[in-house]
Length: 103
Image (cartoon, rainbow, N blue to C red; front, top):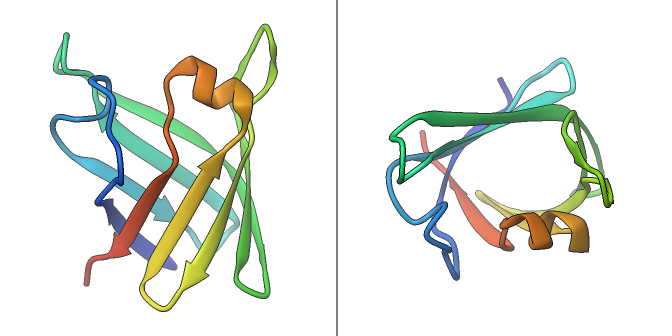
């Protein structure tokens, strides 16, 4: 595993404001984002593949919407990862976030 990150989001919607927020980037180029659904308490897991070039991480998600593909770009800065979601993911409820490395 390259990094295990927990979120300290700048803004949180109710869908992501409670429970744990964990993102993992694995050595094999895959990732997963785990969130707790506040209404059901279930852990939601979103996964996909990533590629990192010069501190920029492109996230290619396994999920999508009928409106189009999910997409996100992250910027690595030391021990943090800032993620910006595409419009389709934002309309689905995701908000741009800052993740910090947890040892």
